Length: 101
Image (tube, rainbow, N blue to C red; front, top):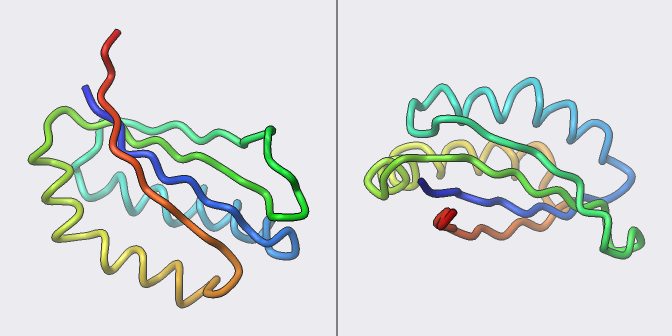
C-alpha cells in the first residue's frame, strides 16, 4: 500500500475558504478519478502559523501504476483549478510514501 501525500501551507486569510473547497470539491474530484482507495486529512500543529496554516492530505493507492496514471491524466487539471482559485496564497509539496507496517 502507498500514500500520495500533499502538504499545503495556506495563507491564514483564506484558510477557511480553502478548507471548505478541499473538503467539498477538490478531494471528492481526486477520489472520483478512481486511482485512490481512500484519504486522510490532517492539520499540522508543529509549524509557525505566521508562515501559514499547514495541512497534510494523504491519498492511499494500491500500486504505482495508479499514481502514475493520476499524475499524468488528472493532476495537471486539478492542480490548475487550485492555482486559478487560490494562486499566490498557498505553497504545496508532494511526497510518495510506502506503508511498511
